[in-house]
Length: 443
Image (cartoon, rainbow, N blue to C red):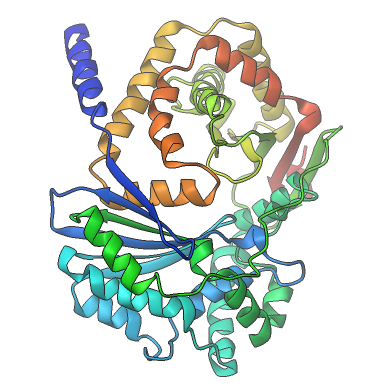
């Protein structure tokens, strides 16, 4: 077994040394172009990322970024409503879009020889979208139904909304990406048009093309189709409000009769991956794995699920991909007959013991191996690579930061983990939430 693990480590190290081929350009109108060359299959992923998400929305119009994402499929001056996706499908491809707190992205996956057609259509809707009152009215019902299905009918999603609102008291991360229902109802055609006119511009966009392409040919196509679109002169600087210092723990209890199993959450504000400063974020990845990764190997899993059988589920997670401060979160589902108070006390004991105990080097080595393997496997997913770079660049990182990340993960030490744990896991800077079906369970 030792011989096998040693051999696997050698193979993974050798493969990881083959970094993806990435070429970058900037068009005269300010649009960034990123090309990830992978010629193993005649397929290309074409993505346009806008450096605007729900956290960039003006107050009072929450959901406008996501609503506009829907409208982008309605039609342009030369494309009929629905024609964009129909054309992609007719050419054997697939397309979609997604909105986050920090970005909005549109993508197509097609045969490599269809790239020019994708650029032609995507560049057209960057500057020529037709937004009509009729289209807004129709799509509003679609967005409301989406919110009903994903949020209103899901007590866990409703609890998470309240949890984030307690976590972020000054930052727009407190507002749901899809928007508050009452503000979705009031979004006007003018609201959507103004948001589109201001933010959907080449100097606020990143073109990512990954797959069987030649970088110079991609650049020529980008110049042809995107290069003629004028930059937005009024594009505002991307400045957001910061969270004030949190001086006391915040607690919420969310009650909904549809909750099938009570559970608790605890989150702390944590540093995100910043350009040239990703060391703490890398250490937080290890901290999450050590405390609440695998149920079989993590401290919470072993202590609460197997030793004491206090919980049926334990988890620790860290969302390092974020433009601004992110979170480090614990989740515990107590076993039958165990109160939330007892489950929380048990969780706190495990965390306290972790803070004083030594971390076994073998555990660190195991996490390094897992992370190295995941990085190697990621090289085979061209869509995943395109998303990795697009998300990172819209969240303030650089190509160099993305490519430095795997080595930073491998370099994390026990001291790094202990240091970041001391910094982040401060109860005075925590939000703790109980999610229950009734008040009797809140004990």
